[in-house]
Length: 252
Image 1 (cartoon, helix red, strand yellow):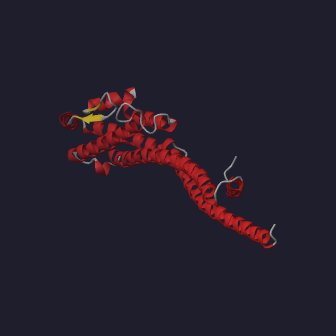
Image 2: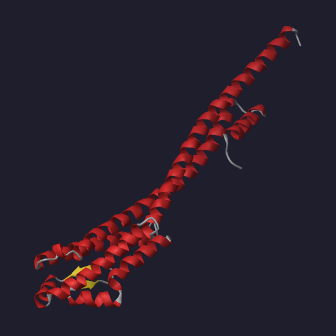
Image 3: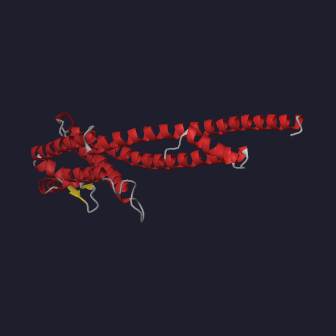
C-alpha cells in the first residue's frame, strides 16, 4: 500500500482513539514516512555511486577521443618529436580510461566495483580493449614500440618508436592514423546518447532526479502528517473537554 498523508493521518488518529497519545500517533506517522524516506535515500545513494563511476569512465573516453584525434592529424605528427608526444598522450589517456573501467567493474579490493553487474560497463570495457587488442592492431603497434600489457594498459618503448620513425616514418604515421581513427570512432560511439556509456549516464541521471524528488516528497509528507495529526488531536481534545463540561454542568 502506498504511504500517503491521508492514510498515515487516519492510522495515527485511530491509534489515538484506541488509547494512544497524540504524541504517539504523530510519532508513528512520522516514523513510517522516515522509513520510506530512508529506503528512497538508500536507492539514491546507490544510484549516485554508479553515476559517479560512469562519470569517470565517460571522462576517460572523452580524453581518449581527444588524444586519438592527434594521432590522425598530420599537423600533430609532423616531426618525430610530435609523434612521440602524441603517442605518449594517447597511451596516457587510454590507460586512464582502462583503469577507470577496471575499477568500476572489478573494484580495488575483494569486493567488486560499483558497476560489477552492469552490462553497459562491460560493453564499454570490450570496446576500449578492441582498439588495441585485436590481432592486426596489436601486431602493428608492437612494430613501432607500443605494447599491450596483461592488465590491458599500454606501454610505449620510446627507443623502439624512435627507431621505427627513422626506418619508415610514413609507416609509423599510417599505423597511428588508423589506430587514432578507430579510437575516435569507438569513443564517440560509446559516449553518444545511444552508446554504452552515454545511455547509462542518461538513465542513471534521470533515475537520480526521480529519487531526489521522491525523497523530498516523503519529507514533505512526513512534516504535513505530523502537523495534521496534531491538529486533529487538538480538535479531538477540545471536543472531549466540551462534552465533559456539559456533563458536569448537568451533573450527568
